[in-house]
Image (cartoon, rainbow, N blue to C red; front, side, top):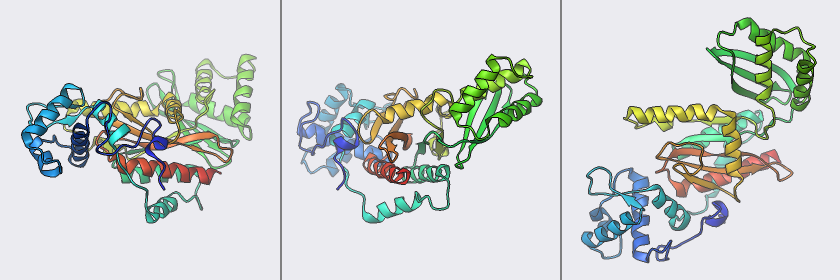
Length: 362
């Protein structure tokens, strides 16, 4: 059986349509749940006449309008523009997820399909995790996120690649086949020769070492001034090595970013999503995602700005941690998409995928 909503989403609790939720009577709770489910389905404002036809309560549109007015006054609904319909606020969606959401177990066929997509046979761990992120993106109609485990392998190769003024990509390849990419800031006007010199210097000293050993070796040589490097190359090397310093998380894999740009007709909204993409490139985002996933048992759901990860309105994130063979949380997987994602579908899929990844790591 599927774990209870409380086990899946931390503070979530199961509730039937007739139960009192957050002080709402059963009629208000039923109307709110039906309205949110219609919003998830259509993305459009929901009117009282539509609810009257769908609900088995025998209520007139006028009676439903009165209830909707009360829900709006309580901060659970709002009226977009001059529409006669209503949409749920972030607070209304939170109430729906915490107390009104109903979902069932995944079927055996679905479980087998997820396990097959995540199968690691003939693929590196990074490729397997990327495929899992792509699968979640497709199933949820959102962007798939995976915080890949920190590599335990030894360094095979490290390289710096120029991206543009003031930015470079650090590529790290380990002997267990993992490839990690980080974007760093470099001095403006840095010549290509400095990046090449930094790559050569590191590869001559770091091959075969662990990340911790590599950091200690480089820091020791730089501190003792036992290098023939110029000042600019010094800065590049220090910035490159520092990207892995002190972090417990590995890299962030994002798949299906384009799904966040679909149906956006406002330039401001497009710019907000593009800003989110840039935020996802930052290493502190990886650590924050892992921290959020560790907040409680099972799936964590963040609506709007609740995560503190982004300020963009109209987005939700569903994320679950996965564990290695020692039952230690080493990564996380989930989706980020519009607030009207199908929570009842997405939550059990994210939960089961995280458990499949955990079994592979074990």
